[in-house]
Length: 158
Image 1 (cartoon, rainbow, N blue to C red):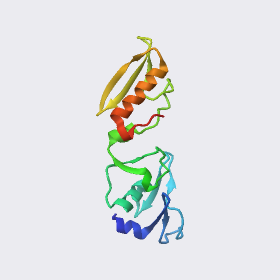
Image 2 (tube, one colour):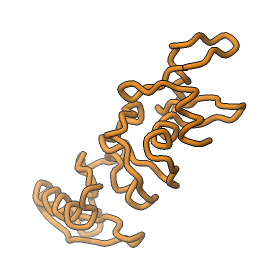
Image 3 (tube, rainbow, N blue to C red):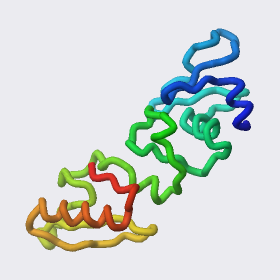
Image 4 (cartoon, helix red, strand yellow):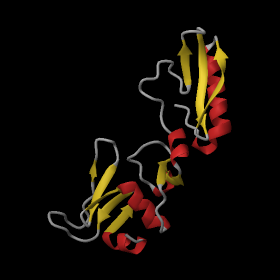
């Protein structure tokens, strides 16, 4: 769908889409789409499911990149200011700390053999190690600095 076609169907307001035209069981002004179990919103357009953030990006930019990043990490914050074009690698850099993390700090893990905290992150699809530390807080500081240096604007620290 083109930007013009989408703008004929939807009204964009504060990161949300509302129907401009009536559909079966849907009135003009109703919020478009539903929230999925993944936390993203999707909308059925011409029988095809579309992600709300992708529709909004297209409506504002007239193109659709392979990946779109939610800057704040919130999949329901589809304000255009919170959406940016990215690639898979950068999008993964902006993810939150994994739920199975045991150190409490992103990119820091306990290495049983050496009895030390280790810092590791991915850079250009390669795993890089940034040292072994007795002190957990120092390991976290090193991880933050590494993310800032290598992940730049996509660095997320929590």
